[in-house]
Image (cartoon, rainbow, N blue to C red):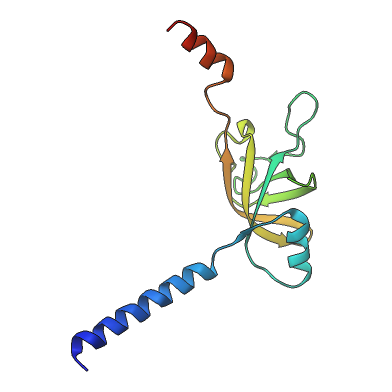
Length: 141
């Protein structure tokens, strides 16, 4: 075999190894019920959960706990998943900016001792344009 063929095979093997490593870290979207089942089975795999913040009748977030002067790296809140299951979520980092304004929250992490411990929080904030503003702006054209 030529040296170029050997080098090519090594490069391909390394590329396959990198792809397999990153694919192994990929997580799936589940509900809190499925995340609890995974934890009960002893699996500590990372999962994504999509939900909305629990709010009262006036639109205020219920169950949010963040005291930056006491511990800036402890943020807890209640999230309601797509199956309307409420779960306490703990995030050991500062509260994300505009958290209160988010429409939908995607968290990545796993269940630990009846609490979902989040590694990442992704926020879907409301659009800065509403249907009324779009109609008003296009009416003058």
